[in-house]
Image 1 (cartoon, rainbow, N blue to C red):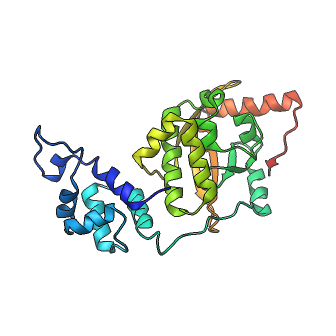
Image 2: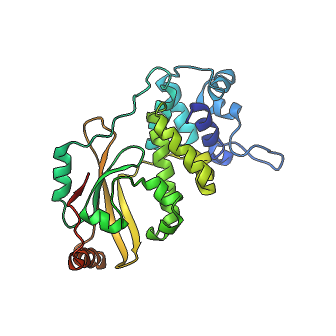
Image 3: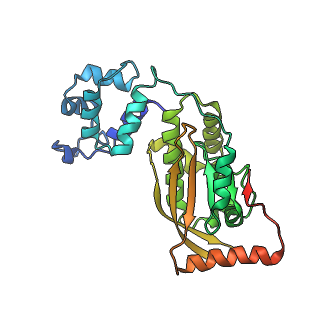
Length: 278
């Protein structure tokens, strides 16, 4: 699904030669840096770098990876991804299981005033509280955020910033592919998304990685209108690959009123929702 060679090629294609001190002229045919330029700037031989991009070099040292990260302008998330790709052959992590502990479900049920859910590395929603079900308008089990965003056209309007959401999703799945290269279910999901969405194919080919732990998330709910929420992602400390995601509204904001209205409308309708969908 993901490999060191492809990641290096896409990264060097985005480096402006001028920023690396390399003069450019109209005869230059290569977008970004040439392989020999990356090798020279990184202090490695051209032959060794070519072998890296061809997948024939194994076990690059930390010094080499640091030099490549510097030349290619990688951020912290990309640098970690580069290290995982370089070590895949000797450290292939087994994809974690999907069972949510009962204690976690109890904690999830205690979150009453904000949508909250538990997701795995494939963006499968494993459990969600009552407000999460109301926000998405469906039961939480069986929902995959990537499919929801890319393949369910009728649901696209829920995401007020749909284009940025697609970048987040692809960046997340790229990171997951680097961590769990042997995860057949993840590979199947990526194939399904690539077959069904031209935008996914284009973004996946960019090989961008993103690790979003917090930030703004805006929704356009069909009943209560726009909800500008703050997303916090909490990685669970048990090597499960799961994370708890909470979407909170600022006190006194229109979004807080909207969530209160959404919860009240559900209560008024008599539609019974369990506190936790498991």
